[in-house]
Image (cartoon, rainbow, N blue to C red; front, side, top):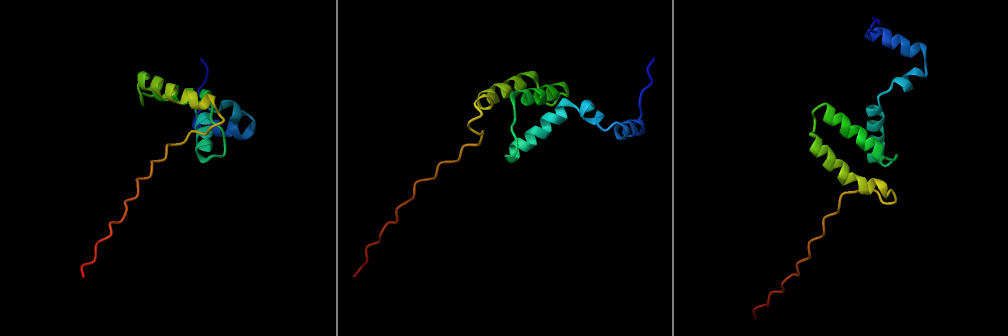
Length: 106
């Protein structure tokens, strides 16, 4: 039976082997980092990252599978056409009201 590593042992292992942290890093962590950078406008977000985050949310019970499918369907088109950034639509300006001139009483 393999021995399990404790928290301090994992920390020591990560310090001793500098490149191992990138190998052990969670794909969810990578997707989150990319999402944060994309939201700030300093990186790109890919469909693979969206799928990873949705799978994580479904596994953890944060969202249902149906909602996950809807979210992926919503973002699939905009992520495939990377030439346009995904932004919220700006509300249309309301038409300006014209001031009604009052007739002066003389």
